[in-house]
Image (tube, rainbow, N blue to C red; front, side, top):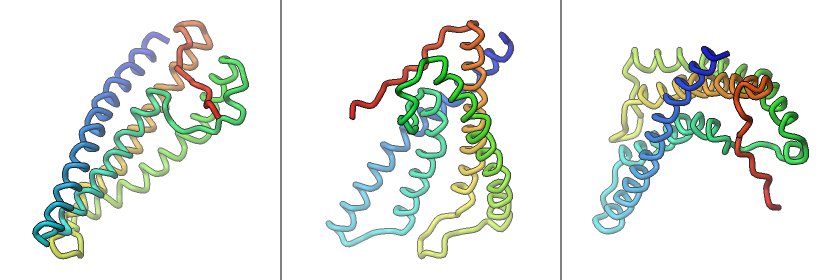
Length: 179
């Protein structure tokens, strides 16, 4: 179990780094958006490239920030049952949900988005919009993001199994919604 927990810590470390990158993408997207609006309204100048980089940054925020959000246990969940059960039951819900839903869909999406990126990279696909950007970088974010999410799912499952076996203390920071 200690080797699996070390593997889990390595995954957490990687997704911490990508989470910080995603946080910076928020700032850059806001600055680019403000700059683009300023340019458009003040000088009547705009560029499709500036709009597309905002979309690319948004894709990065979601796909690279999602695994970090899962690590921090801040992801969206259906709290209808989760908030009313014991910590042990919540751990089992997380394990079963990870194994039956999260991992399969992440693996499927990684599998299907990788060739999409490879094709785009091979032909150096570019936007059809005037002044648009190349597309393969944003398409690369898809398989990377889904693979990182799958890895974080594995990390979370390892931590929950360790908590069930009392190898680590169960401290998964769940807050019941106030509504």
